[in-house]
Length: 303
Picture (cartoon, rainbow, N blue to C red):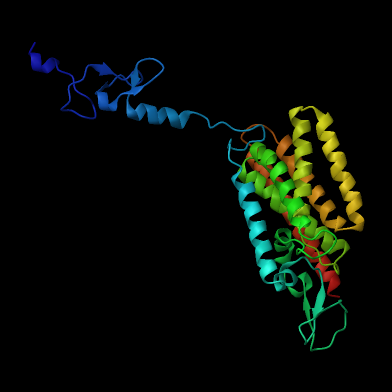
């Protein structure tokens, strides 16, 4: 046999002599194309194909595993930026806080709603078409000299968001966590619209109550030691009662209920290919319910 015909070359580099085969496809590969494998070496294409076939690790609730609570960082950043904006321009609070209905007079002042009002007045709040207030209010807080808490309002909420949010985000993954947060915030605002449409409210507390509910539901689903979790929930519910005289208990309760519903769907969805659809469907159904309730209430208030 001719000696040149016995020379084997790399399948990717035909001019490079090679005597090593890929353990997966058995093609000859040169040192540049070799990749370490559990046994022997594999070519770059087989390594790439193997990586595609490996299932991405997920948490118990279907979220992607991540060690950086990016969404929590972003949410805290947005709250702080909004606080700086409202301190610099106090009118931001009147423009973006949660308000079901109110009136703006010709002098620019804000007045209590009356069904019959002069032409020189105009409606404000959700009744006046300012639907964005349902979410923007969740990123505002009391100014330093405002209300019973002042600057403690945002400090307490951001500390709570940092402590609870990191745990919940690590279990749910970023997308599910963000959906939970926003739906909890929306749930709090909708309950305010239903029960206290004339009361201006603001703060991330509704969303944080939703995260608290998520923390409890997830702990039960994972079979965690509930002693510490139950103490946490007792404190959260106690604050809900105390807040009835100090802050918007409607926003807190709405966030708690919305967060509970979302997390139950996350935790008890079937653990197969249907899980993402069931979880997304539950979030979508809750969103539709909240929108319908808000539309119905606004229609009633406009009568």
